[in-house]
Length: 418
Image (cartoon, rainbow, N blue to C red; front, side, top):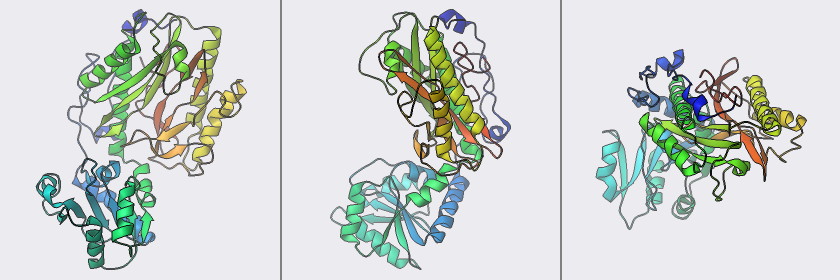
């Protein structure tokens, strides 16, 4: 059966019920009366206890590595450990989390009142005037704390922060804070997984909404506009990029315009976020009837994705999953190496759409329960078409959980259960 507008209009509503672990974390609507109903109402955001537990996990690592304090500048690491969002600036604003004791905040003096709106009432604010050095202020504060050890710098800190510390606090021993932040963020809690599961459901549903409105001659911009509005209608900021026909051979798109025609592959890749936690979903569908080659390539990519899901177990090396997918694709005649499957298998996902760790050749890091990744094998044939299928998953104690629970089943059934 070909994928046409009529076929999608016949598809039933998508249930938004959550799994058992998610139900304890979220209190969102479970109705499925309309395609674009609100799905994020009642979601419970992270609370003070969540941030306290994250900091305690960081401190356990810091103690083992003899790190005296962790410096976090604006970005997802700061949000993860403190819940505080702050824009990037040439003026240093940062959290200084000691291995023992209370977090201190480094803040431009003229921003003190604005910072106080976001920080806990008892937060220690260390302010600096425009002519003063915030880096010397950091060094002075560290000297007042007991014990020794390094100052670990969060991995998203910009170069001028490192240069400022080297210049104005030369006696400090600086360390890479990724050794603290990445292990903490890599393994998600049940609450984090629930946010991501809901985000994946919303994105799948937004795609379904747009697919039901396909028409010959449609522009990619019009198609993605519907996806963006569908996300918004369900209460989540999100969107996607879409490629038609031979443009699908470009994994991340091309500047060349190509409007939709009968027989085209449509590749759409995007997502949304719930409480800052991202989804990332790719579907490749056919507008009309597939050629034998289109069918064979699609089936090969699907087989590779399924083989990866079957191989997920705690203790398995990240890089070995890339090898599983690549072996399927190579056996089908689309190898070797990166010849047609041109990118790594997948990336970590959470507060960042792409984050540590990665499913790529040579990564010996072992999978552990709570880790989350994309599984997105693809085959790209320039001048013809490309196919990618992407669903994110969480590693469990016994295997895998597909976030959103709606992987593509066949070329005509892009969402399981519909």
